[in-house]
Image 1: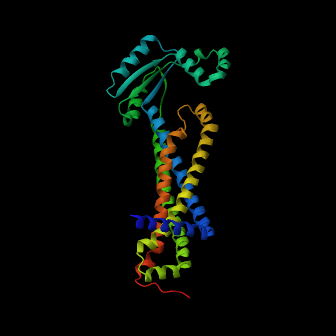
Image 2: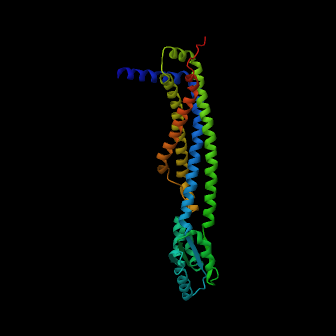
Image 3: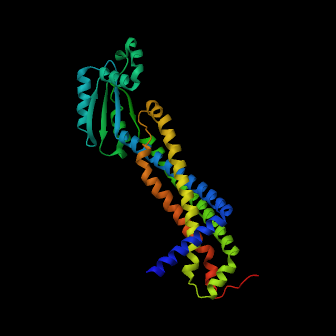
Length: 309
């Protein structure tokens, strides 16, 4: 037990010694891995934000807003309501009077709503039906079925917008996946070469250890520790950079975005923090371990490592 513990301590010492001895090379690895993970983090934030926008709009996509002409009679409005309610694809029908429309507008204007008081908007704003559909794929068909009604001023729906948002989201995912793959390969290459240079600088030590019977794992682990240290440090720094940058954007621009575009809002960074930390650190750990293993692999495959004078 004590022997295994001493071996572990010696292995850790060797790893830490290598980190300090090759700190300049380590800085290059940390910088490149940080850049890679930072870009990956930004891509994750952008992808999640676009998906969130799509989901928020999808919450509205089932809504079809049917605006009624101001000269429509109560009988005509009642007939239109009956026509909508008997539609097999409708889910919920809500009637919104001009007065209710004005109240909603004032709420959206917040502290500036007093500016609307003297404009007599109630006479201008149309009443409307808000219809939620069971199947959004039939939105256009539903709208066309009502367009011939003479008391309808306009019909609004969001399906085309949602389709465009999802299309953009898919493009971002594809582009992001390609960029992440390229950056991961670059980081693996840099980490691997950094560790390889460390191996070459200690080739005599490796030759002596091999000749006295040291196992491959005993030789390999200090280099893996170096790789893990570089990549984990880079991943922690990149997580902090991405998180606090997004938090700054959320605090300073989130409310403004929502006030200008009421159907849009940024995700609270606290909801992303844990997942973002786990993803970035897992990728960083993977880069460090895989890069280190590949860098020393060919030196350990050889049965005999020659001593270099």
